Image: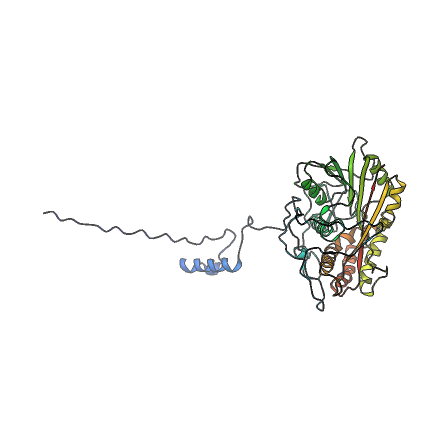
Length: 433
C-alpha cells in the first residue's frame, strides 16, 4: 500500500522593505568596514537625523501667482509690539476712526462679503533677525532677463520707477492690498466712487504692480473687462476678463481706449507729473465716468499734526525718502494737492475721504485699531529696504552699506514703543461731466 506524503509548504514571509540610501548621502570611508546591518543602521539614523530631502521636495516661498489663491498660509499678524504692551488677536474689522472732509459715510460691509485672497499673517514676510530678508537671494519676476539688478534688488529698466519689482516687493504689495481691504474706508468694496458695476464694461487700473486690485475686481465682476497697465509685466495668472498692458502712464494714452472707471492706488512714490496723468485720464473717461485715487500720506503724525518723540526716527526716514524722490522728480506729499489738481483737469464732484491708520498700539484704541497698527507697522518694516534703496542711492548718492546702517535705527524705532502715531489714508474720487 502506497503511503501518502504531505509536504508542508513553507509560508512566504513578508518581504522587509529595506531603507534606500539617499542619492545625495555618501558613507564615510571609516564606516566601510561595518557589516551590512551596521551600515544600514548608520544610514537610517543619519537620514532621520538630517532629514535630507531631495531637490524636488524643497520648496521656496514665492509671490502669489494667482490673485484668488495666494501662496500664504497665515492666520494672524506678527507681534512687533514691545514687551510692556499686550497684543490683540482679532482680525475682524469693527469701527476705524475716520474723518470725511465732505461727509462721505464709511461703507458697511455685508456679512457675506468675502475676499479673494487667503488670510495673511506677515510672519511669513518678516524675519526675527535684526536685518530683514537676511540671506535672502532676490527672486526676480518672470521677466528676470529684462530687469535691472541694482544693490541686490530687481528694478524696472530705465530707472523711471525707484522701487523694486522682485518677489519680496510683490509680497509687500499683497500685504498692503490686505490692509486696504481690512482697515480702510474702501474695505472689501474695493472702491468708494459712485460706480454702477451692473452698467459698466471697461475699467482701467493705473500702476497695477502685482495685479492684486485687478485680480480682485475681475474675479468679483466677471462681466467687466479690467485692464491693468504698468511699466513692467509680471506674468501672473489672472481671470480671463483681465487685460494687461505694459506702458508708461505718464506718456500719451491711446485715444481709442475709453473706460467708465479709472482706478489708482499707492502711486505717490512713482508719478512725476500728476497734471499730465489726470488730463490723460480725463480724456480716456466716458462722459459721466469716474476716477478714484487711493493713497497713503507717508507723514507719521498724531491726529493734531504733531510728531511724537518716539516716532521721530520714522518721521526722519520718510523726510529723507521725500528728499531723495524730490531730486528724482517725484513729490511724496502730492496727495495733499490732488483734489485741486483734479478740479483743474476738469473733473467735477471731487470728493476727498480721509481716515487714519495707526502704526502704534495702546490700550485706549479698539482691538481693530491695534490690529491695524500691527499690520501697517509690519508692512513698513518689511518694506524698509525696498523703499529706501532707490531714493537714497539714486537721489541722495548714498552707498548701499550706508543705507543698511541707517535702517538699523529705523527698525529699532518700529520695534520699540511707538506712541500716538498714525498715517493719513486718502480716497479721492471725481467724475467727468
